[in-house]
Length: 170
Image 1 (cartoon, one colour):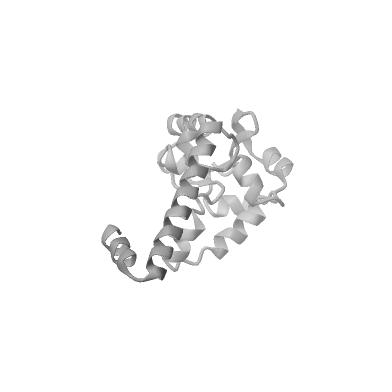
Image 2 (spheres, rainbow, N blue to C red):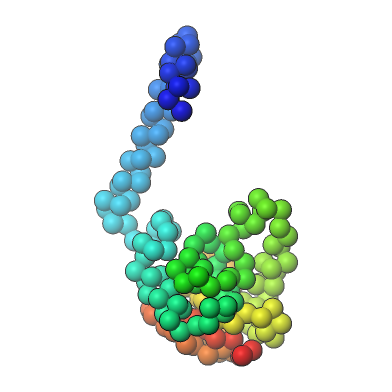
């Protein structure tokens, strides 16, 4: 990047302006990152799961209390705790990556909507062993019928507003 910036700087007026704009925006993004960390802003949907103590606790519980091949239904984040912190497979991963691999993930997303409305038969059909209900899932699937899901499975882990539900399939 440095040779490119030096080349641009040597160009006429527009090159210097472009390099200065890049430097300003680069500095602003760094300042936002530092401010979030310095101010200790919580629940900002910022950072990875290993920076959130609640998610670390869930990941540790999953690692110690579920089979290594247990399939989890979670929010389709980059770093769902069962996958990122415990090495368990998830039903629907981060859609941005699935899209770049040209995978058809829309079926799984539709199935997730039905399961999160309380269709545990469909969860069994898809071989989902556990459902992680947390704020990420609530945010991404706001139409979820949480009471229905909680009532149809066994709550095997609870911490504040985070639940791990064992589906009735096993």
